[in-house]
Amino acid sequence: MNNAGQKILIVDDEPDILELIEYNLKKEGYQVFTASNGQEGITVAKKVHPDLIILDIMMPKMDGIEACRLMRAIPDFKNTFMVFLTARSEEYSEIAGFNVGADDYIAKPIKPRALVSRINAILRRNTGTEEISENKLEIGDLVIDREAYLVFQSGNKVVLAKKEFELLYLLASKPGKVYTRESILKNIWEDSVVVTNRTIDVHIRKLREKLGETYVSTVKGVGYKFELS
Image 1 (cartoon, helix red, strand yellow):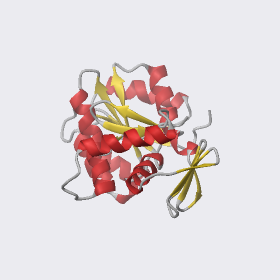
Image 2: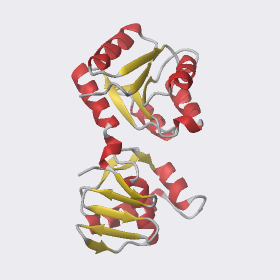
Image 3: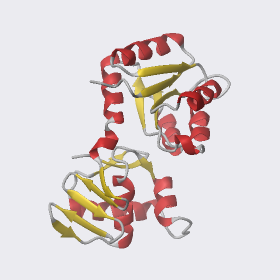
Image 4: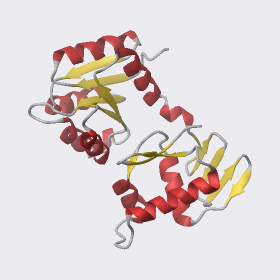
């Protein structure tokens, strides 16, 4: 695989972890940069503009959650992939990470082959979605036209309610990205006080009834994501 043009920043306070990840990603052809805490990570990120940032959660000076939150507020990093390293028992950390804008997480202990496979898959996510025009997406057998509020599946028109359409477009615009219920509420329903998590669940169920079960998957305790078929 030719990954020579892609940059990855690893932020972790454990030298052994940094060395292990750096070695395996460089073998894949990536340009790799490192930092030992969140503050240093932000500084390096501003200099090198990585395509993907791997963040440990527990670090001195500034943890990964805070570093991710601050970087997501910087326009240059709005679309940068951010991935957390988490212990299998830290479900609360995974939820906190998704809440501040993480795209995915990798469980510790790190298995090099699985790590490389996951990173490759994350960086390929954008290639599955083709923007036909500014307001139209083509994903697999779906065409989603935001301007006309139309959806076609294998050439057949699918009738969606307005909020169902907006929810589908949000999820499909970034396949594989997990959207928390909070971010869905903010993006689709904004500040409506009558909307609850149950409202989101109902709209997801309706999308599955109309499009099939394969497109939208549930990430337990966190939210939903669009799966590339």
